[in-house]
Image 1: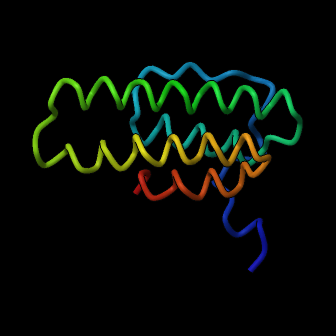
Image 2: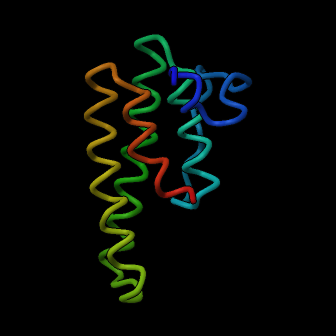
Length: 107
């Protein structure tokens, strides 16, 4: 199974030079970030992805501070941690691995 098998549908049609507006941490937003991670090939692209992951990390941190419903708290906490780990992977030029970390939150 090659790298292509793990790619998000539509990843080949995104422009990795676009910076995504991150207003929430919905599956739709995460799917868009994943597609951009999968298409990112240059240093500039990776800087944009780091900024988007920073936004996810910040938004989930705010959500945790607002004491989400107990049934959502664990999922938000896990996404918060995965966003930090994905950010670190992008900083190590591993955007596909970062995408894999986020993919579990889009199901």
